Length: 294
Image (cartoon, rainbow, N blue to C red; front, side, top):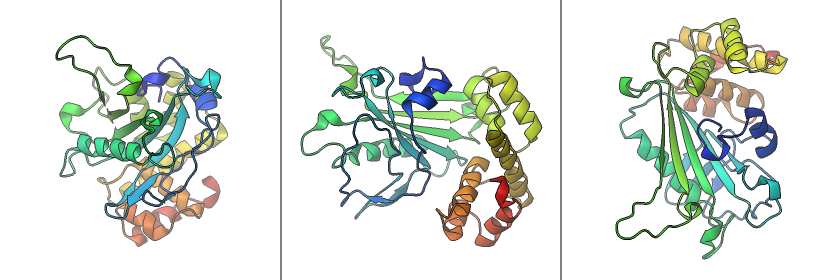
């Protein structure tokens, strides 16, 4: 959020976590039918995870990896105000950078769905002024060579054709797509969020190396819980490589799926399908990680 969302660029990471997000974002666990949803609008002072699956009677189902709500820092000082600016943020992990269609178009489609899904729970009839800005952030672990170690944002911006009339940005700046394309260390752009995510999601770095880099270069205080999670990700990467799955979804995604199955929030069959594995392969990976380490 700090590196990709304009509204949080001046905030510290701790400030973002403590002030602008509450609760646990929903991770591929909730399904919602846009056609018949009857949820009430959320109160401005409460930040809750958004439903992370949209579906309609005619379009089928769309799954979001992670989706949550947040309050923009500029308005958080007056949470009871009518002018509170609220955002809906979606984060996706993507390994296949050229899956047979332009990934950017899919990301824009996700933004469009997150806007249209606000009709009913967020605004009714012609209350278009209540529409919340949406972000769709894509972490691409295996981009094409020319996209490696790049961070790109696609947004709506005005183009003055005749005259110089100025519209308030909050009336048109309603969707942004961000692509975070990871790459090899031998690049001048290999820094900041690009290096942070590459280290965190690496399948070749040992847990001790990850811990050292995250602490010394990025100031991440390694609590016992966070250290366990880093170790789990390293173990998962080894398990996936042992299964010969060098291509496929990211290690982070598999880790989340393992967690969801063990928490009883997702069935193994569904997790295996999302991991592009057979049920037997997925269960074999799960079996290599003791329950108490999660």
